[in-house]
Length: 349
Image (tube, rainbow, N blue to C red):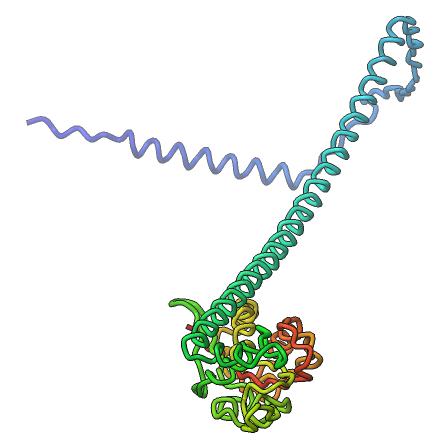
């Protein structure tokens, strides 16, 4: 049997590697330890090179002359551009001015509409007041006609005509005064004058001072300071010596409660308008304002004042008082000054 063959290549490679590393190590040590001395004689000396920088001037070419036509064209373009900018600025300024004028015109139209609306409201109030006045006059005329008819039926007119012309009692106004005096009836203390449903209610009292009881009884009394027609104001002058209410005399024409109430009712629309305007500022505004005013014989109001008020709004009270001062009543030349106290109740719907 042959002996086994051993592979010694690996061991041989290790030996060679160790030997080469050892030689390299020894050579490196010798290189460091042994100094190097160059041979100066063998070294050739080279001359020093001098570097000189030379500036070469650049050739600058003069700008070529622009032809006159091209220059003129450029100037035209610049001028056109300048004009366009000026036109643009002018257009912007004009646009701003137009906007300002439109705004001012809109404000003016709004004020004009507001003024026209106020004038329309005032005209409507005057128209309503005129209609109420005409209605009151028509009612008074119809009432006079009814009174005349009643007088004829009751024999009063016949008795008056039987006295002859010397008695001077056939005057229509005197007959109306006597009939009205005999037909006055007691009025309730208050009378409601509310507005329609859904609108603020405006209530007015029917009592004017202390006239209700005095006129109803036909006794001498004062209409808040003014004498009324009564039996004592007529002097007796009958042929048979008996006292007669139709004796020859001059009867004083005085203001009745109904005539004053009719005029006040005709101006109720104006008071209602003032109350509606006040409700816009204070929806809870309500209460009673008692106003006292003095009537002159020509029907104008001499003075007016607020006697009492539970409203608590001086501005509204002043507005109502100003409207009351503009009222106009029928003229009674022989009545003298008449003082009237009239409470008005305000309450929202």
